[in-house]
Length: 499
Image (cartoon, rainbow, N blue to C red; front, side, top):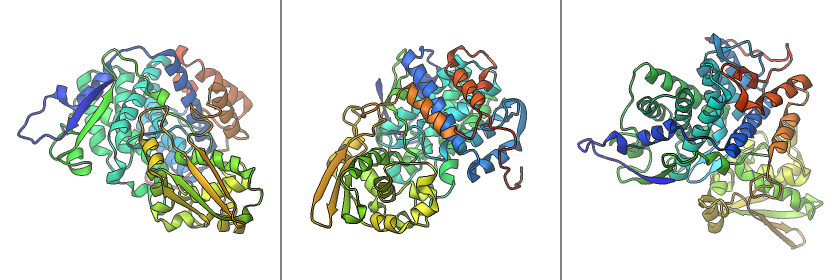
């Protein structure tokens, strides 16, 4: 990997394209280095993972609405929509919108956390939609997705958005644009302009993840995908973009991030170096914010020592800055303690999540968030006995770039009414590559079967799994096989809108 210095330049100091981050990102995108076998296999795993959560959420209101909007943009020879037959296609930017929303809704696909936060699996819907529309092959798709993951992860390693209250899709959109550039074999100049377009239009605030969290949490990454497809389309037609988008004196770094004195070092693969960033990412076994994954597993373990949660006086979760301030009591969000809060808010409340996991010993993407479950008297009582505290060591490990040291868990101190203290800790979730039971293909398939059980037919399930595991051999125009359809008549229709 090469580290690239990125800072702000006044307009009177011309910055050569070759020295701009967007140009260097485009250089990675156009590098024709081969995709390594384990990376290609992991890409297949993540396509399976995305399909699992998308089909499980297929009739949830945000997905129904997004699908309804997409169906207003039908296009022969376009891209497929989750749930519908592969023969029914729409314009790729709206397929990215609808499918991206379906993937993101349950907050249960892959994650990468470093200087900032990300769900790199959000790169897949727009790249796949364009691949289907443009008649690309499975190998083309693999190359495009490898680039999307690489650029996304590298930006997340280097540039913090959260401290400036900028939503993390600001790193996602340029990664999606770069991935589409690789997929289509575009020239560096075109990818460069597309990346700049994508950055310019995708900076939004984190209010979407604060207070009363709405359905926009699922829509935001899908919106980035739609913007990325449109950005590439525009520059393919000869249009340009604000430049230099990162380093300009009135651009995003100068005014929305660290300011005129900012200095970042962004790692990117050297020319000819394989794109392996997907191997640093990790998926979710449980449908909740990633920082809760290890703590859910720890709650299951602690349950063996606390058969009656009524005996609990207090629970303190010593954890990272992010966990404390974003999903913990440090957020100072009363909604995170409200049994009538939305599902989107509850899955960003580690106090709620830990209480339910401790009481139930299981976690379900539907049952664990049901209003009746959230309102249970003994759960509310336990929930309000839980607090979080930042621990500098857990914060350090959270931000560590050493994959063997990086941690997202915490130390839990349970104080019983009789004065007994039970203390346990867990650094990474069981499913993490360094966890007790790291996930392999078998786990991804099991998740797909569990999440889609009762929603799709066994025949459709087998067909999809056969097709996706044969991805590298799918020819040009055969990527419609990666769509998953539900039985006719089972999809809900959205309320009418404009489209």
